[in-house]
Amino acid sequence: MRKNTTAGYFLLIITVLFITSCSPFAKLQKSGTDQEKYDAAVKYYKKGEFYKAGLLFEELIPILKGSTESEMAQFYYAYTQYHQGLYNMSQYLFKKFYDTYARSEYAHEALYMHAFSLYKDSAPHNLDQTSTMTAISAMQDFINTYPESPFRNECTRFIMELRNKLELKAYEKAKLYYKISDFNLGSLKSAVISIGNFQKDFPDSNFNEELSYLRVDAQYNLAKSSFAAKQKERYEDVVKYYQAFIDKYPKSEYIRTAEKLYGESVQELDRIAAAEKAKQQKKENEGDPATKPSRVTTSEASSSIK
Image (cartoon, rainbow, N blue to C red):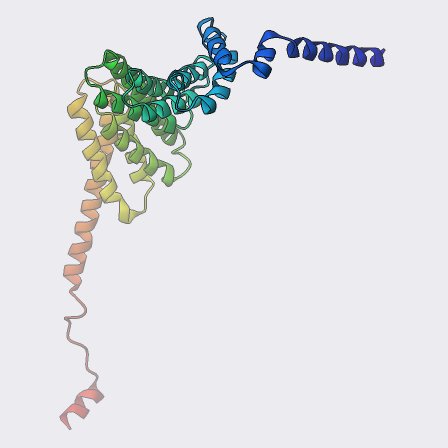
């Protein structure tokens, strides 16, 4: 039974290969003239058969170099890749077209499609965002090159969308450091630094109210968990971050908890100040050993008289 099934599969494969090899497209690839292939490629493209059109244009481009059809072959070829969802390839081909035919009537569209392909190829926010930053740069370059372009508003909207993706990535990174901050001081430090960086990069973000509070919380726990020598400076930062938070978000839902952290930090600073004052007072009462006269024994005194 298995032998018959295997034989049937082989027969099916052979039949498919035979039919394919005898198809008009296969015959065109094998024996068609360059002009016939070009005309067919354009027809396939207009019918939406982008795979077949792409195969023909890819074959023709080296052959048509220097001819009147060469420019359009490269332009169509870039679009065949785009329409198949091969955005990394299409962005490369559109940019190559623009660099090669900068004076073409299609140069403007090609540069836009280069940027748009990069936008389409941008990774989800939870992955590495190098592609997103590349797409933003390409969109901005297009706007700078063609400030009056009808695509300008679209590009501006795409840039905002891509920046929102970067914002969400940065927010989740800062939150992640905060969530794991109970494990070690390094995570607490990273949470404080990441939140500060986020606030600089995205000053108008809707996430800033929450993150401003979390920065107070993370800094408080960092100060509380630190060695005595580091506590004063770190509690002072809690007070500083709290004051910035309360100034910007006086009606925040996190106010009460933030006030508690602030109050405890002030108490700790008072305690540290009192301890430092007592230490200084003790030092003054005892005097500096270096300035005290040394004790002289009776024998030493006698020797000195002699």
